[in-house]
Image (tube, rainbow, N blue to C red; front, side):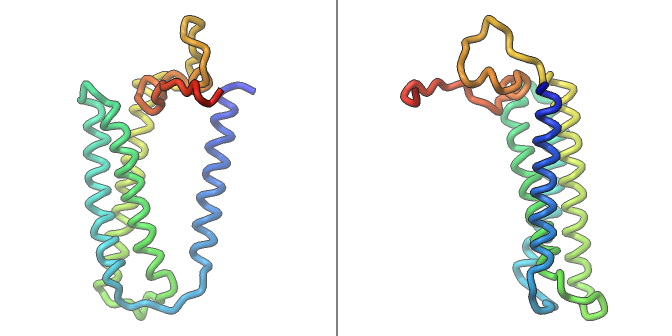
Amino acid sequence: MTDEIRLTIQVIVSLIIIFGVLWWMWRIPGEPVTASLAATTLSFSSVWLGVASVLVAAWLWWTTQPQFWAITTVLIWAAALSTGLLALWTYRHTPLERMPEEVQLQRLQARVGITLGLISITLWYIYMIVRFSTLTPPTSTESSTWHELVPRGLRDAGFVFEYTYDWLT
């Protein structure tokens, strides 16, 4: 099996798991909620984390040391998506006609945070595809350890640290 096929299968399986968990989360029974301090904080955080993730993802294109910023981008957009989804999840059983205007604005904030997080993901992936050849096989001059199985682009981007674990063998 080629690296491209294996990567495609991993992405598809990951998406199935993510959508399965989200589908299950939205079906958990609960009571309608008209106001929640946690959802207020989550939706507010989601917007600002989304803005930060887009700025950091854009900063990747100009920095000379992208390793730190690439990892930071991943952490920030994951936080933006998580906080936005949790804010929406809090109000999942509340009908629109029973929602106060503040709650509707919080839901809008959460959606904006999620959208900005998705824009950040897109910028990050485009940067990784353009900057690193993620599916380049390792050369024969590299040492023969476990990290040869990891695509070179991910190692070059700093996502895999090349430590040797002799005590495992």
